[in-house]
Image 1 (cartoon, rainbow, N blue to C red):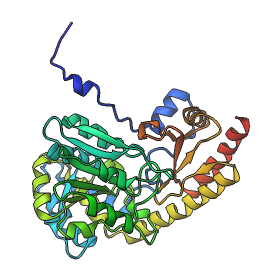
Image 2 (image 1 turned 120 degrees about the vertical axis):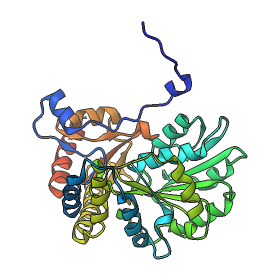
Image 3 (image 1 turned 30 degrees about the horizontal axis):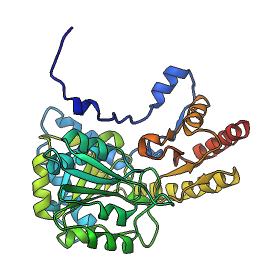
Length: 370
């Protein structure tokens, strides 16, 4: 039997499973029509302008990316805030790669820790463990929000990073400006605060915290966003972090060479100009999540208020795993949220209106049969 060196700590790291694809379900179950509402993807397809730009860039597929990284950063930064420039942005191979970079950059020795909400994105935990650090989990509040005072209270001499997700995945709730300001006042200057804002394009709450103000104030803050949802470019893998220049320059040392291809970078840059697509995408989500929550209420289901492109159903009338499996056999892929620290919930991505209506009809049948 072949042997090889192993890291026992690495074997304890949970594997992140992104959920079943439509092709997998068709192959496994033999179901022809599959509607995927599990991975918070954009059902409108990618930005048309992004596709065209990527297609043009493919003519140089034999070349390394060149200036495409810099070109995107120069275009993106002032769109985020007039006070920012390319030195404030670090690109990665999707948001998960950016989270990997952050862990590699700051969790660099045994005994250090990161702090996060128990009910949130599991990649923070995975990235911390792979980097050799320890995770301190804080229970969510009674309404499934981040308990920011409790998180701040657990910071100790070995804490390197605190993660905050707003809108939070899988709950969809946000951190308000007042709560953010109070929290940041409690966090020591030496600790890096990561604001994961992958779903910020769908927020319509007026009190949503402006995390970029802390970047401009010179705080050790990294704001993580991506093109996966708002531009429909999940398969092209473009994520980024925003920080003050010194912090961003340091983080760049954890960036892989040629981290993303020029076609993806060109597509992301072009999507910034696709105003019609961006507006349609946002409006579809705002309308769709309101529709889903109203229909869930009619079915007697408890769903959480959401500012993202998904809605979480909590305490359904059957175990979440069973509900997800039953819906899978009816042609709908949704996700039970135990891996996200919410074992009593199922998360449903907002689809097109036609998809949402079909889902609600089948969900009603499933609930009535439970």
